[in-house]
Amino acid sequence: MRTRRGARVVLLDQADRVLMIQHRDDGAIVVPGSPVRALFWVPPGGGLKEGEDFLQAARRELLEETGLTEAEWGPCLWTLDADVLWHGEPVHMHERYFLARMRSAEPISRAYLEPGEEQGIADHRWWSLGELVAAESTESLRPVGLPELLADVLAVGGHPSGEPRALRV
Image (cartoon, rainbow, N blue to C red; front, top):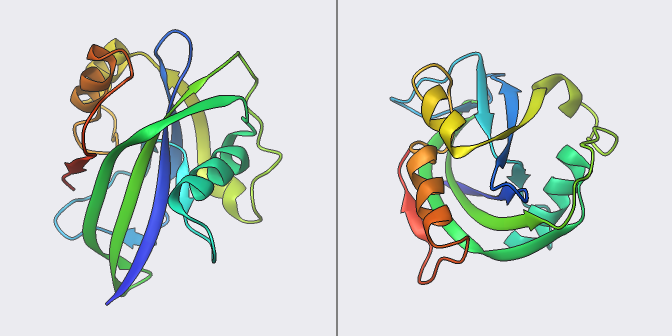
């Protein structure tokens, strides 16, 4: 089985809000037993390109999907391993989620999106922890358990120690 490696960014602003991107489900990724709504929220990120490491991919994806560059980078917080169907092909997905914090307020831009990505992204939004908790029952948020995961990061002032936490699908 082929492995698809990806990197995502848990980007916090100066008010400890996390940036999420609302995507339209195009059916490309199917996680057996885990249905996704037509619209879902995930942190910025995507697949690694040839020759990239995870952190390089996270930085590139953040620029492509948001236009944001002024971030201070932290550790890898979480990892996700799952067997999925990628365009109908069985694929093992391995993602790493990196913490980053905005140094200053910058407007979000779609100017760096790759061709075809514009249609898949419906919205960008900064969410407070309270808003995530309130939305967990009405919105499709990924990764699963995001409010609790973010609360754990914020509880240590955005400076977690130890190994990255393995996420569930």
